[in-house]
Image (cartoon, rainbow over all chains, first blue to last red):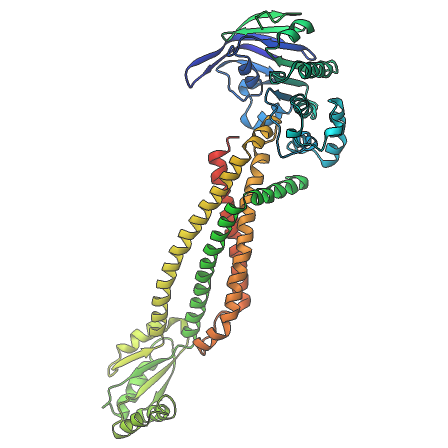
Length: 229
Length: 296
């Protein structure tokens, strides 16, 4: 599904070594936590997977696509295979909940019929059917994150990458989001979650990849967070 | 491009214009003004060409002999003129006939002039040349001047030269104004699009993350520019054509026997050129901003 092969990333501005010879493989349907201190290289990993950043050496394989040789104009098609969830939700404030989710389908050229057929189901999955006409500013943080999750999954990508999805949420809302991520994963979607949320990592008993100073220091099948929260 | 995408791009383009209406209006105004000047330029050019052609068509060449020339000298000159290539016929126009035409025509209400002419006719005998092919009048004028016994050659070509000199000056001034205004309009459109890109950077960013193609992101902004260009062209064409139609009778009176270019012809030219240039300006304006500021 996703494979890092001896990936090194050096940011040219500032000459920072963000990832140093990192190799791992995530199989289809897996749930993986990406942990490590701030600045360890977790975000670099997610940015490399969607080719937001270019790798310096090595290769990344996503869905049988080699990113080192993927031409720029194919990047949009790579990203259609990956749903992204961010800590800051990244919703459009002037669009309703429904429109925010529909937008993701619209921009990849889905028909309005397909949009009408798909969006309500996804909203009901994240429990927001009754708030479809509200603007993001009328929602709580947890609800906003659920909208962003609905948007990430509406095009049925085989992989969802969540970068600190609970970082801005209170424990209750964070729990709901984690439950949702687990539900979606159980329906077959590969899930990669970069997080600082020690309690979830420790209790959910999923595979843990720990990054420190750009190096993969730990890869455990049923791991724990391993740092002080 | 699928029809539903087309609809989406147009809607997005229009909403971009509306959400940034002040800048859009400024761009629109410069498009209208620059195209209006272009319209003046086109109308001037069309009419100059048409009038020159008409003058050439009606070209009359008068060859004068000295005042004291005898009748036989006039006939000799006439015979020589007939030998020139492209000369179809030579008519004689004596000073007496010319005096009579003047008395009845141009000076009919100037008694003093008539009295003076009566006392001493200052006019000269002339040969009037009819051409085989009016387009080649200049050669005949030059050849006629070289004929022995000819004092002066006058033709309406002199008028063409004057018309050309004046209008080409006006055309030069206009074209520079047009170029400056067109560049200004393109820069303003570009600035409008830049602001639109800035206002919607969040949306663009999300579009990139969910896998919109670069062209899907670019098209709405291109349409925004094109719509500004299109509306500007339409508005400007309406103003210019309305003005031409309104001034048409006055212009006709001014040019006398020379016909000015009919409205229908101007209409086609203006509409086609304005549409093409207006839309092109829109594309040029948006594309420069998209290239510079939209890193997709």
